[in-house]
Each structure stands twice: as C-alpha cells, then as structure tokens.
Length: 310
Image (tube, rainbow, N blue to C red; front, top):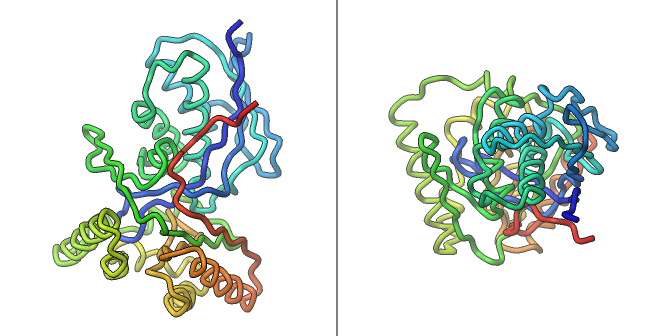
C-alpha cells in the first residue's frame, strides 16, 4: 500500500538580502515548520493546528491550502489532504512563515502523489500562497525554502530561478523581536517609483553581492550588502534598527538589513564565531529596550524543505 502521509521540515528564509528586493533569498537551518501532509477520504481539505500561533483554518485563507490547491489543479488531481502543523515559524516575523507553509504543503503532496514535478517546478504553486499572505506572488522566500541555499529570481515572467553558490563558512544571525509587522502593510510603505540614480546604485549592489557570493569575496559582499530602496523606507518600523546595524558591524558582520518585510533583522558573517558575537549584541540592544527577542545562528541551509525520517 502506498504511503498516505509524510512529515516534513520546511526552513525559515531570509528574503530581499539587502539590495535584492523580491529577487534574492536564502534558507537557514532554524526555525522552521514541521508539518504532516496526509491524503484523506474527505470532500474538503483539512487543517489541524497544534502550534501556539493563530493559523487561518479556512482553506481559502490558509497559504498552505491555497498553494496545495493550485498544485492539485495543475495536475488535475482530485485527492484531498489534511495539513497538520506541529511547529510553526512565528507569523509576521519576516523570516518566511507563510513561505515555509506553502513550500511544505506542495513538497509533501508532490511526494505522496509520486513526485510528478521537480522541486523548481513547485515554486509557482508555493508562490500562490504568498499572494494571499502579502498581496504579491513573490518567490524570493518560497524558492530558497524549496531549493535551499541562495536563489536569485532573475525573472518572474517567465519565472527563471538561478541557484547561487556561497562561501562554505558563511553564517547568518537573525534576531526576531517580539513585535509583529504585517507584510501587506510593510509593502504599502514602499514607493512605486524610484529615481534613476537610486535604481542604478541598487543594481550595482545586487551585482556586487551576487559576484561576492559566487567568488567567496567577503570584502565585495561587505561593500555590496546595502539596500537604498526598501530599507530607508521601512527601517523606522523596527526599534533600534540603526543601533543594531552599527553594533553588528563592530562585532564583525559583513552587513545587516531587514529580513523580508521585518521586523526580523539579519546579518551575514564570515564564520560562526562572529555570527554568535553579533547575536550577543542583538540580544543586548533589545534587552536594553525591554523588547523580548529570539536570536538564531545558522549556516546556509542547502537542503531546503526535506522529509523527516520515520
């Protein structure tokens, strides 16, 4: 008898990565979603939430079910699924909470249905969940969640994904303050048009950052990890943001910026030791502001979403 359920781990992701707004992201080891995807004999999809977070239980509002439904419609499949959340990335954290759920649901269902699609072919369906979560079907979270590592979205129409290698010793520090920012609201702050000079500067930083990652050039990564479009508009939403950036640089970070739409802040660091030093600085600053926070230290997750062994 074919297996009817699978439990998977879907990792958190950092999107935008400084200048790479909506086009660059990478996966980290933790936190992540732990989900069980199960084929059921029911007329409707079902959602079970065993986490402390509020997750929409209406199928049309749940990103995992929206993505799953788009995937099944593409295949012409009529199976119904139950998605159970055992652990969850905090919603509104800026580290790919909705993306992990969307990526996990289509990945698990794809395996249970005999893996008719390759991982990269699942990205457009996972991105449908992002449309529900943020109002934009961006792929810079769901692509690294599915593929692992750094992923560049070169084009959205047609979708063209490029996996980017990175230095083996590269580590990331993410701090998640206990405040919530809605992605849709954070996106509304951004201007629809930017000056040509600003666009040129941002393009140069993206090119430099990609080149630095590919060539393991830490100096070039440091010089290029600057966002001159989204960060200046959004940084006021995060208490102590400039202090965090300055402290991270003093502790040895290559650079810092807002993770996704915030409120999480990330730093890229040459090695784990420096990443831990940055984490201590982040904790110190938020403690001084009496804001609870969680710090995550991680290498780059190159696996992406994966099956948890039985």
